Length: 160
Image (cartoon, rainbow, N blue to C red; front, side, top):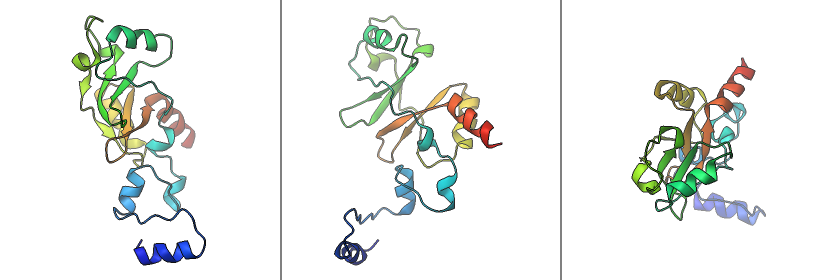
């Protein structure tokens, strides 16, 4: 939207007006609200679990294993202070002594997906890679959540 249009909307009383220069595709890729026919289609960001634990590079593995045990989570995105994803720790892929730190055993630079992708793409990826989750991030790499294969299959089965 042009600065002129944004100013006009503000003059009409709209309080949440954005001059989003990056464009509509970037807006959607950052998980911001959609309208129109695409809004009714489930997207990765709609199902991404946001209540997941995160870990830091210097966290000890023993602490993370203890924290995740019994929590129902077997993956922990590794983030910095701005929640930018640096890696992914999958407990089921870990064969390292728990004396190490997360940084030494994490999957560096994991594949990430944007919130606006439809569910078929990450589901196919999870099947190909034999993983049960993928990381959902904004275009600048900030964590949105973890998309679980079981959630995607439940929703896609219900839509059939």
